[in-house]
Structure formats: C-alpha cells, structure tokens
Image 1 (cartoon, rainbow, N blue to C red):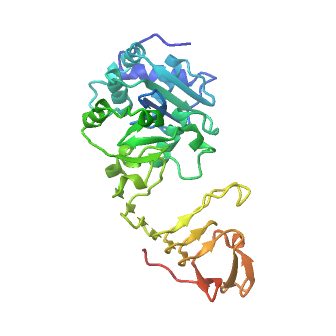
Image 2 (tube, rainbow, N blue to C red):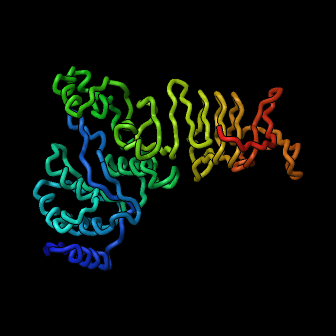
Image 3 (cartoon, rainbow, N blue to C red):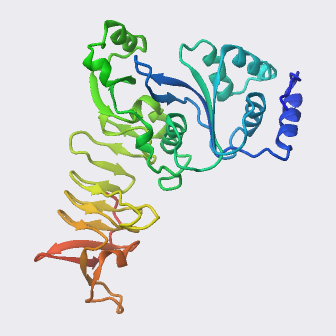
Length: 355
C-alpha cells in the first residue's frame, strides 16, 4: 500500500522506511538507480545516464520508499518512468534532510531530474537474470565500471544484443537513419556545445564511452584515449590506459601491444569467466584462453588456448616433463609460458617485480 504520510523529521523518515522494509514482500534490490534516458533524434533508446548507482545494501531506505511510491514489485527487473508530478511528490519525503548539512547523492539526482529535459526512469534489479533491455543493461555496465561488482559476478548474457549500434558524438548517440538522411544538424552539433564540450564523431559501437560516464579522477585511473574503453570496463585503482600501443598497466598487471584475453563460450571453457591474477604480464601479440594465477608471464606470440599442448618443466614431480593441454594448468602460479623451438613450455619463474 502506498504511503501518504510525509515525514516531518529524519526520525519520522527512518521510522517510515523501517516499516516499509518490515513488510513480508519487501526485499532489497541488487541494484537501483534513477537516470535520464538517452535517445537518438529518431527516438531510438541508446543508453541511460545513471549519475548515482546503488549497489547491494546501499541506500536501502531510498529503495524502500521509491518501491512503495512507484508500486515496484521486488522481483526480476523493474523500470518506472518518473513524471515531474511524481518527482515532486517523492521529494516531499526528503524535505527533512535539506538542512542536515550532509551529502545525499540520490536526493540531488531527484532534484536535478525535475529540471532535466530527458525522460527520467527508475530502474531496479532484484534478480541477476540475463539483461532484459537498455535500462537494466546500462545499469549493470555502470555497476561494473563503478566496481560494485567484479567481472564475472553479474549475468551479462547477450547484453550487447540489448543495445542498438550507433555512432557517438561525444556522449550523444546518432543512428544510421540520421546519417543516411543527413540529419546531423547544427542543432545536434550545438547540443554537444551545450554540454560544454565539442566532440568529433569519433566511434561507432553499442556502449558509450567510459570516460563520459564515470568520474575517473575519483576512480584513480588514467585514460588517454577515450575510444579505447567503454562503459562496463572494470579498471582497478591505479590503472593507466596508455595511448597508441593499447598498453594497460594495472598495479602490476601488464598487457603489451597486440595481446588479447579471449571471451570463450561455455562449451569452449566452462561456466566460470577467465581470470588473471596479480603481477602478471601478457607479452606482445600473445593470446590467453585459460585462467591464470599470480606472477605468470605469457611470452610473445603465444596462443595459450584450452587445447594448446604445453611441455611442463616445473618442479612438481607429478607433471614434470609431461605434455598436457593448457586447460590442465588453469589457475597456475609463478610460471612463464615460453615458445622454444616451436614448443610451448611452462617454466618456473620467480617473478616478483611489478611491471
């Protein structure tokens, strides 16, 4: 039942949400956020801007209140468009916080939404089901880039199919019909200037740019070429994305020019995502297709796939001098994979120095 009692104090607010959360049907969302929909000029929904993303256990009071007011059922994925009238009604419940001198990011977003020209949506994810649409798909990408979840912890099955393929003028999407019909108008170019940035038409892809959506200064990363990394990328603190060579330095994890980490299907590897431990180095033009542990080096021009045959020259007497498929070495630590005489060998290393 939707509440109609406006709290007059913070204590009233806390008592209100406590009652809402005690209802037998209530449960916390996995993720929730309020954001503005991003359309092309032809009304193709390309993305959603979510300035604040709430993860597991975060700001559950706001979650409970919004769920009650908006009639959100705590299951699956829920999207509710917010009218100006609905936003004004919601903000009445937060007046008791206006003079407390504290930061309230979600409240600030709700206030900003009142004057926004975008369509505003509240998106809630309760169950980690495969992505349903643009809204929840975008929210999952934000949660990864904001490090609320690690790669492999969220269900992203077929997520790219939920987005249209568009060109991007900065953070403004442009669909094919616009380009074919020469609708890239002065109005569109000026809209980029209205955001205090003038961008060239610089990329065609389904996901927006990481740097246009994430506060990279707060994340402690450096990105020198914006087109190299999209929303959904998980960049650890201290990551430096270098120009031209596509070199990544992530606190001891190095990926040299031309190196790749495969995204294998379940039939090729298994249900678990590929992972790379700390202090590892992928040398130039190598290809990694198995999980590896810490302190591992993959040599130049090596393709280490699950079925790749590897001659083991380690101290372990059970596998020393044996030739095994690389899948049997999944998760191994302190090893250098080197190609010698046309044979890929696994050699013990004492790699400790960070790249």
